[in-house]
Length: 363
Ligand SMILES: Nc1nc2c(ncn2[C@@H]2O[C@H](COP(=O)(O)OP(=O)(O)O)[C@@H](O)[C@H]2O)c(=O)[nH]1
Ligand SMILES: [Mg+2]
Image (cartoon, rainbow, N blue to C red; front, side):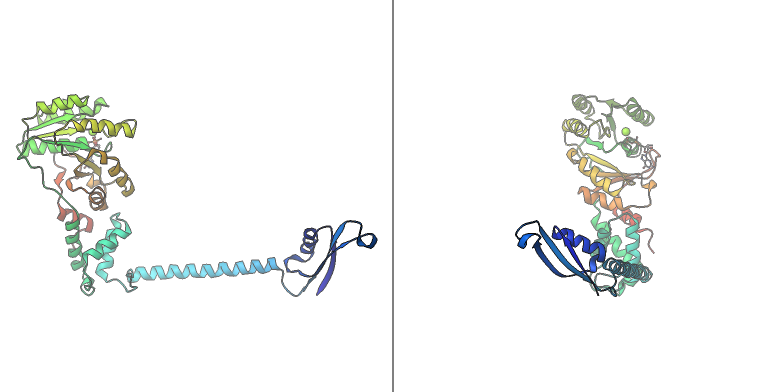
């Protein structure tokens, strides 16, 4: 034990010197305030500190470092254990909430759903709804699980049959972001209904921002042999549609955007408002990321769209959007498009097929 006496003007100064000499391990044995001078009545107040240290004990800073090193080593060990557990789990299949192992058929289905760009909690919830309680022993069978999931998807993915032509004209504006395939899809629909369905079809475009946009649709209209009217204002749209009231189907092409989103929506709504009971279709691309899709759906809510068209299925292997889009929108799927080719690459949306795309071929 080493002992030392310190005298300073203030307690802080004294302690600082103790620390400088002995470090944090110093023990304060005694402190005292006193005045120098005649009988202690005059002169400045001083502080006396008696401090001691046991040189056999390691200094606090060093001990701290050792503790930290030990802690790091423990954390590292925990991390590698966690890693090991994770890879073991992967080998054995995911544990369920109850901590049991998932049957092979279920873990396979879960892996497939996750590949489809569906949110994790959505995948699990879907499986839970698809597999009734107490069916764990059947769930080793991948085929059985696949069938249950397919049934569940068909039940949960709303689709609508093609338009009802008992009351005509059926007026169908397509809205959606730029480049998703609105114009191409209109050409496909027009060609199919006019040439194969023997319906009388009229085309109107209000997408007049770019000359090329009008020319794009006009080229298709010419090939199919249909009239195309161009409407620059809501009033012109009203007239255009009125002039085609003898048609079965009037397809209306719109612009994806203008400079300002708010302005675009207001303009779009102004056009849609002149139409007598339009069947507005929101067009979304299957390759749109999930978060973006949710945002687009909200952005176009103001158009009061009633149905969805999902395009570019040929451009992705993750079909989660076919499940998520109708859920996010609360609207059914009407058509799916599968390539650039007019008029071939379009299909009526079908729940069975959506399930097949999401789940892959039956095992
Ligand atoms: N791969 C693929 N491309 C498509 C599909 N539908 C449209 N496209 C292409 O997407 C691009 C934009 O299409 P367009 O109809 O002009 O989109 P709009 O801006 O919404 O009118 C064009 O190159 C189209 O050929 C589809 O289903 N699959
Ligand atoms: Mg277009």
